[in-house]
Image 1 (spheres, rainbow, N blue to C red):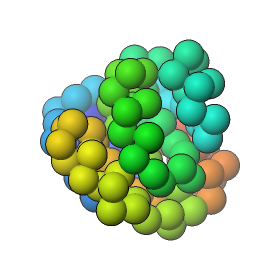
Image 2: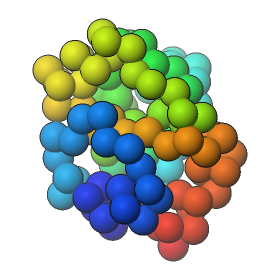
Image 3: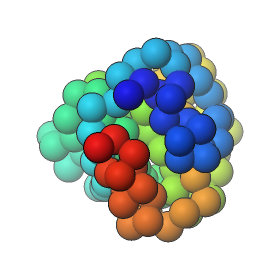
Image 4: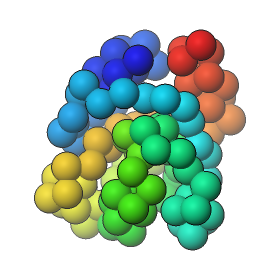
Length: 109
């Protein structure tokens, strides 16, 4: 599945979409940035409530396909700017993190 297909399937909000054709191969949930860097799989969708500019840097280092901010979290201005600069796909959803992870899992199967 691509990010472009995932957006309507999960009802995601688009904050920045640089690569709609990038594949989504799985998911990772985490807010501890050092754990995400070491454990998130390449091309996964990273679900988090973190909304500062460090998220864009970690997304690049972990090579995730997109970041999904859960719980209706809005990106702060610095994160949105960095996501645009670094071409990080930044999305959002109003669901709590657990529900978003369950929906992602069902959507990708």
